[in-house]
Length: 289
Length: 172
Image (cartoon, rainbow over all chains, first blue to last red; front, side, top):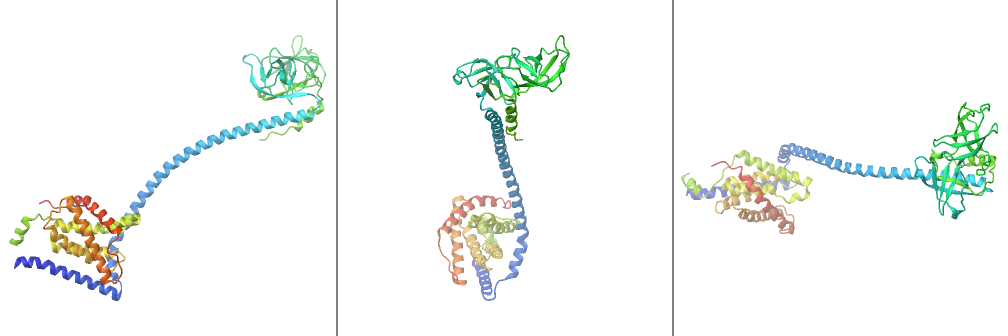
C-alpha cells in the first residue's frame, strides 16, 4: 500500500501541476497576458542582465581599445614610413624644381646672348685632390670643347677648361691656387690680376697702394689673359688692406662656386655685352621659396 | 519511511543544497535570455532544460523533479515571448520523467548522459509541439534539421556541464 502511495503521489502531483498550467494557458488565451508573473520575473532578472551587459560592454570596450591601439600602432608605423617616403619625394621634387630654376636661368642667359656660341654643361664630379679646386663636366672634345676655354655662369666667371677629354672636361676654378685671370676694377678701370688662393675668396693683385679701392666694388675680367672675354663679372671687393708694395685685396667671386651644378662653356672669346648680361640675369626666373 | 530508506539504499541519491539548485536554475534562465543578444547562435543552447534534467536524474525524486521543472519552466516563460505555462508544462514532464528514469539507469557515465540528454531534448521539443498544436492551435514542425543540430549540441554541452554540476553535491 505504501509502495503504491509512493508511486501514486508523484503522479497525482504531476497531474495537478500540469492541469494548473493548462488552465493558466487557457486563461491567457481567453483574457490575454498574465502581466503580474512576467513583471515579477523581469524585475528579478533585469538587474543581473544590466550587470552582464555592462560587464560585457566594458570587456568589449577594453578589447576594442587594445585592438584599436594595436591597429593604431601599426597604422602609425605605416604612416611614419609613408611620411618618410613623402619627405624624400618632396626633397627630390624640390631639387628638380631648383634644377629647373637654374636651367631656366642658364637658358635665359643663352637666349640673351644668342650671338655668342656657348655650351651648357652639367657638373658631374669634383677633383680628387683636397688642395685643388677642380670640377668635371659632362662635355668634352666631341662637343667642341678645348683646353683654356672660359667657363662661366650667369652670375659670373667660374674658371677655365684645364683638360678636355672625349666626353668630359676638367675645369679649373678661379679659386684654385694655380688659377689666374686678368682683371680690372669696374669703377677706376685699374688693371690687376686675380689669383686663386685655395680659399673661397680670391686675391686681386698688382694694385698699387695709392689706388682707391672701395669695398663692394665690382671686379671684371680685363680680357688681357686671352682666355676670358672682357667685362665679365669676376666678383666684388670683400676687403682691402695696405700692403707692400701693392694692396692686399680679397675678392668674393660673383659665381656661386660652392653650388655649381650647371655651367656655360664659352666656345669663343667673343665679348658678351654687359647690358644683355644684366638683362639675362634679371630675366632669370625667381626661385620659389 | 523504512521502505523508502530501503529503496534509497539500492540507488545512490544525490543531495544538493537548495540555494545551489535554485541558484543554478536562475543562472541558467538568465544566461539563456542573455547570451543570444551577443551570440545569436547561442539560441540553440537550452541551458534550463539541461539543468532540469541534471537535477532530475541526480536527485531521483519525481516530486522534487517535477516541481523544479515547473519552476524553471515558468521562470523561462516569464522572460520569453510565449504564454506562461508553455515551457512550464514541458519541463514539468521532463523533471518527472528524468527523476523516474534516474532511479533505474546509470546516469553518471558520459555516454549515458549524452544519450539521455539527446533523447530528453527531443521529448521536450515533442511536448512543446503538442502544446502549440493542441492547446494554442498554432502550426509547429515536429522535426527539423535545426532541431537535430540543437539536440546534438546540447547533448555535447551536457557531457561537459554535468561534471561541473556534480561539484555542487553535498558530501555524503
